[in-house]
Length: 361
Image 1 (cartoon, rainbow, N blue to C red):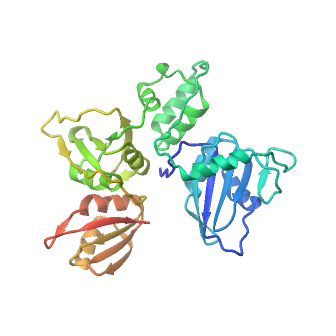
Image 2 (image 1 turned 120 degrees about the vertical axis):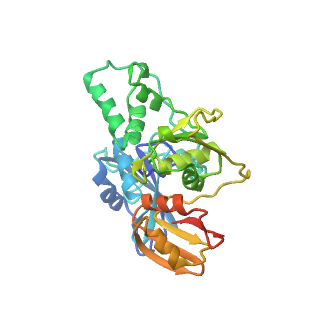
Image 3 (image 1 turned 30 degrees about the vertical axis):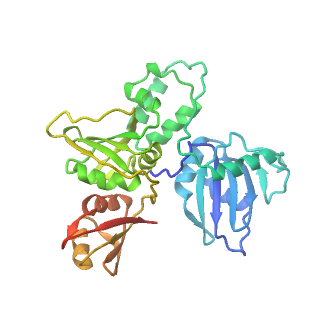
């Protein structure tokens, strides 16, 4: 699962389209045809046109919005690029405009309703992406438990896309969680933290390999790797860095296992076994700029690119290899392959020179 949004799932999506050709006019019909394959659409609003075009799509069901974002985020639109974010709007009210701007598909006519305040509030929202914003739940009477609900819980535990389903559950089903399976209780009670727990590591993984991967998404302060339990704890310098790492790496294939990531209450980390690996770091207090996980890697400070390339291809098969001056640009077949190379070859010393690996878009 790759979830690039910083805001909690919402039925309303914000579309940001860049570099559309002047010969192409974006309209509601085009957006409807593109997104309707994922579920019924309530409303569409195109509220800004120009070099950057912005629009909202409101689905009837939350799960449709999540699936549409998964499939279409970053896709090519007439030579331009479309980025998709979950909106923070609770309702999408439409200004009285023609169908080239706003359409309410729940009404018999395409007339819309006024909302100047919505446009202004959304402009502020685009500027302020608050990574620490999380889902707030409302209290209401609990429905009676049933075998059907228990079956839903089991599916949540077994599903590889359980996190998305869990977010849907938290927003659409009023819960008294005490009656449920302890694992479900733990998932529902999670709070964002700069400490994360990672489960299900492959037996060949080392603490250094964990550092190589997770340090790509933020400044690490501590790692405790409990190898006998295939479990690790990582403390980041900030909550936002932990959130980014969790979003990019949760449920991803890391060597021969699919890892799961949870937020943990902040606590001191102490090894309890001679097999445990404990590492502490003193990162600089400075903003951390990271790049989304991708199968494109740039390896620099390489003394013999062709020999390093041969070594890399012992681990993964490359889709494309380009050589530069003391550098290699790799295009791999998957993000999982990229993680292997990052884990093994980051800071790899060859001919008295440490290599550096950079994620590229």
